Length: 612
Image 1 (cartoon, rainbow, N blue to C red):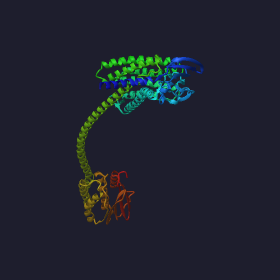
Image 2: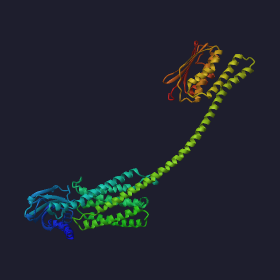
Image 3: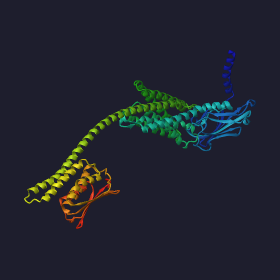
Image 4: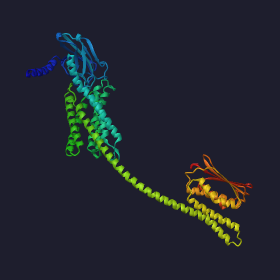
């Protein structure tokens, strides 16, 4: 049994080695090179061939011939060919048969297939004992074009090798780019919606720095997927470099904000330094790509690495000395790791010129994205907790204030009722003084007169008594109830009308209650009608009195009509008419008087709605 397990273990270990042994890595090549239309230059060389390192960022084309031999008896099924890096654009030929066009080699500064690995299937019929793989490629200056050793062999093994590299370079970049977009979108939404009320309601710069940095990083790592950029090279190269510079600048801004240093006066210099660093990235990439001087971009990257190495060490030292702020410590550790990885990539890729080497920063950058996400979520959670506490405290305080307001309202309502009652009593007393008091004063003067007319004295005292009764009735009258007011007026004055020999004709329809009319306005209307009827009793010498009231959609009309001798309404200036005019204005109501030898009609019009 143990021998069986040992045999299985050996099989699993040996089979992959056997499969790898069948793969051919083509490293020896003959090359015909054309630089900017000059040449050709013939060379025997060993791959990989780093175009920018060999030709200082100049553009050109090259044709590589890579011979290889196979034993036809060992070729079963289709083969595959895997290119770790080829291009920028290329034509792939095998035994004078075109296998694929990776872009157009005749057009410069367009597509770029050198960013990711490439795979082609080779039909078995194309493979001979002596084979010639011919690769025609065009490389743009400063674009990391060239040719890495292609790998040939059975399709299954070659495709597995290609997929492994593709997952590491392209698949991982897709995941990181999508994650960066999500984190950036969430951070931007929080920046728009969340405010730091402890600092004058300003938006938290942590969210904005995280959002802008993650968007820039998504473009930088996502560039590996874009074989046909929206901009021609080298403009696209400048855009990608600016995205990388934007990421590191926003990362530094984010770290500064997490530490709370963005409120320090040093933030002015920090912001100016980041602006200069971002601007010089564009200048360095322009010099590297347009003027074919890649040393400028290498120097800029080296300077950025030096600056951020110093900043990371200082930041980490301060974070260790402030352990209570775990966010600062997390950012310091992740930031230091990213700076170390960035230095490694700069040395291996920019300084040493490795063509097949992958950048590690694309993978370590995800740690920073995770740190950003954690801090953004925790800050949002803390803000939510503070908001809930604030809401709870505000709710409690509002409830207390509502209770206080309710108590104050009850007291104010009681005081208002008392004040209204006092005001109403004062008003009634004033009316009694102005009405009853005036009539009593007139009666006293009449009694003191040597020639007193008993009838005049009787009318004066009767008016005084009627006004007193109406004033008492007003205390119990419902405000705005014109129908009840008219009925009370009839009840009080009809005996006096009968005693004076006046026949009363009563035509009063059902009157609506006017909600807008308060007690004072109702009393004004009551005394307007009383004054009109009193004038008939005293001056008209009439035999019949008509009181008519009706209501329509807009107004209530009340007419007082007598068949007396009439008077000249235009020339009368009695105090009674002036008093009636003042009371009508206070309601407000309109009124008019029509009088002739056949009688007098006084009409009052009261609007049903206040705006009328």
